[in-house]
Structure formats: C-alpha cells, structure tokens
Image (cartoon, rainbow, N blue to C red):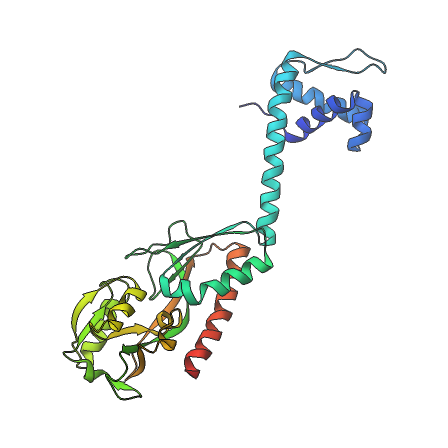
Length: 298
C-alpha cells in the first residue's frame, strides 16, 4: 500500500487550484520550500512526478500520473473530511443510536425519551427495533427489557410496573381485587413470552390459577377480547397507560392485592457508551421517575 499522507494530497490539490507553488504556500500558510518538500515526498511515495515544473511564474502542469493521484486524492480527502465530521458529531452527542424496545415501553416511556433526545440533538438518527423472545444486546446501543439479561451488559432498573386486572363493568365490586379471586376464572393472556410466564407463576404462588381461554401478543387485542366478554385480563400498568382502557366505559380496571409487579430495565454494552447513549440513559431515567410518580398516584 502506498505511504501517502493526507496533508500531501491537500497540498497537491491546493497547487492545482492555485496554479503555482508560491500561491499554494500562501493559502496553506507554509513556506514555498515546505510545499516543495511535501510534493517531493508524495512523488517518492507514488514512484514518479506528479507535476511538470516550467519554472518562474508560469503555472505548473499536472502529469498523467498526477491526474490519477488527483482524482483518487480528492475522493480520499472528501472521505477524510466526512470521517472528521462524524467523529465531531459523535463527540458532540449527535450520530445514530439503535434501541431495542417492547410495546408498553414504546407506547409510554420511549416517546418522551425520543422527543427530548431529538430536541437536544436534531441531527441524530434514532432507530428502534422490537426485542425478540430471548433478547441479546448485539449491535444495539440500548435495550429495554422487563428483567436483567446476560451477555456482557450493564443495566439500570428504571421503574416497577404493577399488574392490574381488567374486567367488564359490573363483573366485580369497585376497588382492589384479591389474587385468589382469579382462581379458575376465564382469562385472556399474552403469548407465553416476555413477562407472561413470570406473571402466571406469581398468580399461582398466590393460589390463583386462572383458565387461559385465549392468547394474543397485542395488548389492544387482549383488551378487545375482554370487551367482548371472553374473559378478564391481567396487564401491566404501562400497557394500560398506553391504551384507552381507563376511559373506556366497557372496561373496568382494578388494583390487585397483593400487587405483583415487573421491573423495567435499561441495558447497554459493558464499558461502551457514546455521548448520545449516555444522554439517552439520563433522559430515560428522568422519564421513568415521572412514570413512577404517576404509578404511586394512581
């Protein structure tokens, strides 16, 4: 590979644009002898002359070899400039961030995080992806999940997300419902992924083994099945906050006693955080604190 320095290419391009070594030296702030030395170093690296030197004040002419170097050199300089700008954007907090998430976080916590991040860094690119059943951090900068994951990551618990019972009006008296009252009841549940199995175990530990009559991965579908009278549902506070369940006169939301809850965690690669990711973590923590206050007030 040729041992060509970017500063030598910059000097060559400037000579072509200015026409003489002297004017190029004045533009770059070098002495004319320094310009000559840089051209000589470039010619040694490429193995031939890049300029024809007529002498005196007459403009220099580029050689055929020089024309090849000039074309490729301009492309390299443009790429180097783009790299420099990208590094500066990274240091300033702009750039791109990839976030893994799931539906209830996407509906309640993430919109505020994305809005505030974009307000502070309008040029940043934020890419979201739904987490799979067995999530890995992979190429993600941040990952929301409802329990800690393994694999060389750090994590922060953002908030406790309590489960609530959704029934139809008149099915139960107003107020909290004890978990034991769910035993044997027809229930609409989520697919046995994410936190669903954990939640069903928590109910079983409290002596409640509801009869699951239908499963769906979508919270809105689950609520529609409750409206239709297929059964009750146990859903997290975040899932209901991101829906119209509380204002729907076809649904009734009850607290559970004792109240099971899941944790909402934010993960990132161990020892690897861009300034944009650091700021996103700070904002997510602030938003989660606001959510926790709403949970307490509910």
